[in-house]
Image 1: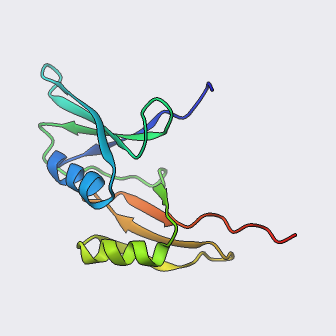
Image 2: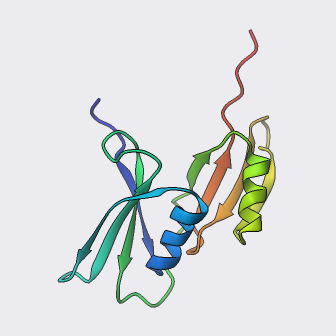
Image 3: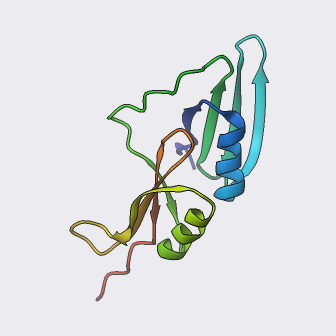
Length: 135
């Protein structure tokens, strides 16, 4: 079982907006949340499964942060696998989620993908399972 990928941490500027997005819009659950009064930050872990067995996202909210974070050019994106990218993205769009790449086959391949953005501008790739190879 070990080693395993435990979590990915991203910094968020608006804790409530981020929770609404990841929990209400994407359907994740809050697994745990801890306030660090002395450090003036909150770590909230969200995901679809268990923090013990599944990779989850740590949302770090630094209470005094006013300016947006610079997202940088080295980090890429999170990815969510869904059965139907077209339908899933249509549902997200109806909720006002920003779609930054429309659903469709990826360049040079046949896997269907799309990209959305969270409230801080982090990119999230929406993918369908890899097609089974023909024998």
